[in-house]
Length: 300
Image (cartoon, rainbow, N blue to C red; front, side, top):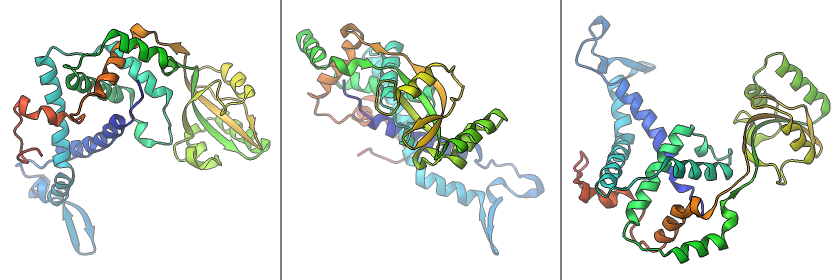
């Protein structure tokens, strides 16, 4: 199964929208007067010179910009759950966890849409898998086809040993020693990375570089040896990297694993079946079946 990053990108965007609209709902004015006799909706949240912005104006703007998208996301979640239940379709925790591990194995921390917490990502994975199962429920794929696909793509189902890392990169050994001293004195790794690291891409993420394979080109044998001596949550001694020095923070280790055909059989079936489905991978395909009616009218 080839990893498809678009569901996670969608999940990240929708999470942002959810957070904004949650704020909207939390701050939603009620009918009772606030202290001083001013209704909550008329509370001033900002002033510009002599002009003011009220809470009501602010929340109305949020609803106009994000309300439709957030409502659609809520509807789609219920649609998938309802229709999946109708057809007795489910996905196991094992399938969700396998997909999550495959995602982690190609995770790039410089793509900030992949920085959501594990629970959020797994919930979106489950929704995506249910949708794929629904859209391919009538497609027949033979055992022979699935086994052939696995044999031709077996390396896709192998995950090497990987380290989840943060880093602080500096230009000389003296600076590296100073960074280690500050860490030992209680300084925060993320803050030091933002202040000191010369690696621009990872510095603004608190040094986050994601999952790095132990046998890849990004880690030297010396770095791997140093990382293998650490426990999760510990930082390394400075490791020379080209003309620079790097201090790593080990967040966790993903052990090497190889999935058998039986482990990934359902994933392969979906992968092959999706290629035969002309319907777009959208929950809106089931709106009519689920009997959706909503505030914004007819879904296009």
